Length: 439
Image: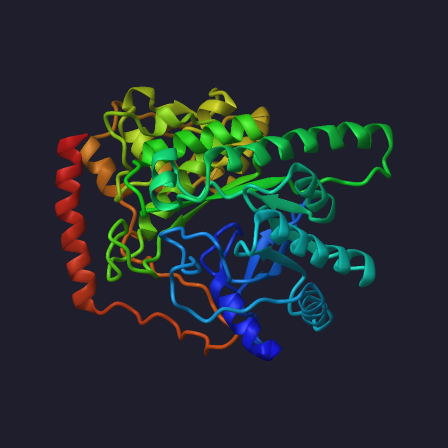
């Protein structure tokens, strides 16, 4: 099998791993990137990575995985030298700025990790490659190999895969909870130790300077949204993760324990999880504020922040000229940047709607929850009217997929017809009434 065939198979097999910020890129005037994704370096730059597997051979039989041992598919593997050379060729042509490397488990977790480490060692020391590298740790590998990988990569990830131990035992019987969380704990400890070493000696070798991340598959198992964000919150606090990635389950293999092959990926649910994750990381929300045991799943028609505001109308209106930063962050339409700008701007005088608009506040949402120098609500806003204004019009527009080098780039999505608009409007009107009555 030639190198191009290997590249086609192994980039296509890697597209189901969502441990990157986005899953596809297509730059004007260049080739469409095979299995390329975006990620962020330690200094905050957005960069494009070659997203590829070392091999799609695997001794494990995870029910949800297209590369599982019982699935009939074309198998191949790169040698460390082949993958290192291939990465450098893409890098020299400016197609990529780094590498995202994962792998099926071949022979054993330790053997697979050794192969991955050899690739990274060749890139760093033979080719003097200083680009960004994100490498996925193989659960069950030895602590020494995890450390060696962290000293070569910028970011490393240990995928949780499924949100509960019960689902892991049922759908991935070869993987154990301890084999996932032990390296996660080790990476956290190594990162903290390395931070202290760098204070003493600035030329000390860096261990995973961009931190660690993880991924959960959404929709292959029965856990609620509340269980998922509670687990994510716990991992952020305990293991100092940079990101938790949520991957909507794409039916690719048939199994009685999985959704049917014709089932649609839960892309809207994935979107809501990312919104809730952002609230926890950037806005100071706790998981129990976003969802609860009584309401364990997201409202599909309202984003989590708007849903919280609608259910906590007693907290509003907020006076933007006196409220604390933490309170401003709770207002729909006010983000971290605009909240900080408000705190600075009001030192020079009271703020009205015009000033808030210039600052960057989304008044279409915020107007129902704020008090300004030129607007003092006489009473709390009508709940039904507010719900109608906050309905997420993007509910019907999910359908992204990873791009590939070996397919033509998809054309633009067709504009909706007047019939489409009418049907969506009617559906939204019906939903407003249902939401208002249930809140």
